[in-house]
Length: 227
Image 1 (spheres, rainbow, N blue to C red):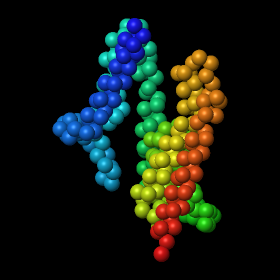
Image 2: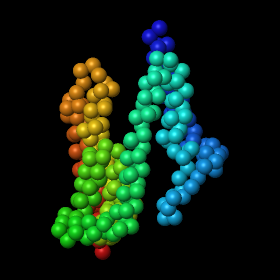
Image 3: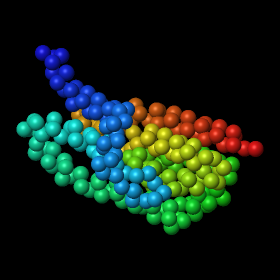
Image 4: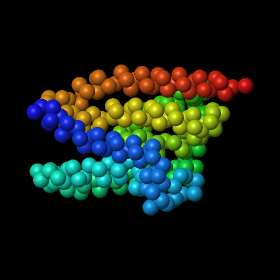
């Protein structure tokens, strides 16, 4: 009986994982999803295919499972209504990123950092990434806000943008896990007396280690780039 319940509980996750993997590994499926709807809001950025986006797939797969549970329908509908504000916030991150890059503000921050940081300038790359992840609690927001500045730092450091972007993404992801809003949500989901502080104490060492690894990586890349 216990095994049957475990299998039933795991089924949505198994289906979701299978669908996500299929859309990434099977070219015909990817071609169809990208071809149905695809648009390019900015010429210098990749095209956006909403049906191929992981978030769209998560919604499409999980909604049938949730709506099939009568007791959960009201909760699902309430959650969808509550998602409006986060969606607007994510769009705002993207727009703000374009404003920072197009207005020259990101370049100005990079120049000011270069003037003040001196030999410690490479370390600002992982520190900015960590700060972005911690403050926004989302890697999308962290990258959207800070990638224009990081691109300016890459130019100042003489490093390929892809290297700096990788470090930004890595540290942003690591520190999203210890963002206060993330820890609070995790504690609420865990219930059973779990607190954000207790969870944070378990995760912070991993985030700190990620920052050290990122700093070592950017310093090594900087050393290799020097003539």
